[in-house]
Length: 264
Image (cartoon, rainbow, N blue to C red):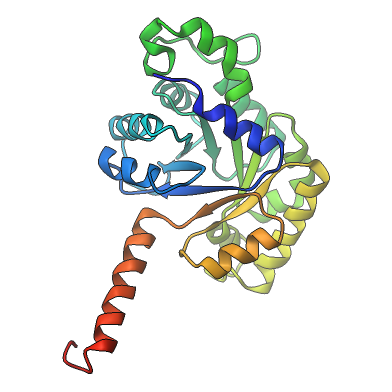
């Protein structure tokens, strides 16, 4: 397999160029292939809040990479063994949930990289071309590996300046729902408390020259425009489920409106 796709993503992040990501929650390699064909700059595979298992994840990673699109995995935890297996399956990087400390960033970086940079164990699987591409993979991996952290708590917002200045952090994604819960206003993702916290994170990101963004979960183009205008450069747009629901509801509403009441 080619090991090139994430080169452009890491460079894009380093240059603070906007990048838009898709979000896969249902699993299945065919759906992953469809989402990868939609034109996203990267696709995230969500293992935190879904039923996607490791085998399904490996198939989805292969389908997305075959389309020439970088694939990031949103981890269910910071488990080093799971990180190793997902990277060996061919993932281009990680989206680590609920990061709150520099020690956690250090541990994530160590889990992603081989010695002497880290503690990742050596395997010969898909990422390494079943062994044939191992030397090239090891040589190029540090310049391609993407680590994005999620800021999802009041504690992380308070420490955002230090977290976003960590040299291992390529980007940050604010988790609006978890952040709203941490701030005591669950679900009020566009309310004043979350917006104030988001402003603080954006300011810290600008000072650290680290791209940051939010997950625009409901596929709303106006909301997407708002966050891009606010300076966000690492943005997830929609989810497979939300896109399906949105389009189905839009179509049904159009038909019902046009039927003059014939369709309930």
